[in-house]
Length: 79
Image (cartoon, rainbow, N blue to C red; front, side, top):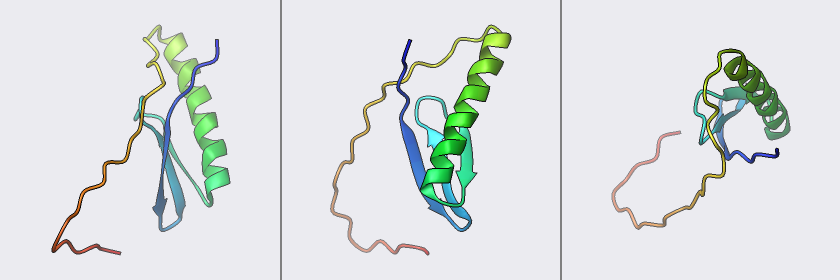
């Protein structure tokens, strides 16, 4: 069965951090987005194996991500 998960990527000092929205424990880092994506798939596969061995329920994927625009005044962004 093919299951889709939603990946969230954030820029960090060392490259990118990737995390699954539906399964926040699946998190990793890579020097660029491609490496991070590959590492995230590997982390997901390892977590699937661990959950099956422990007979834990595997979180379902398929989250819907939506950006909500809002006008914000007097907010300072940190680097």
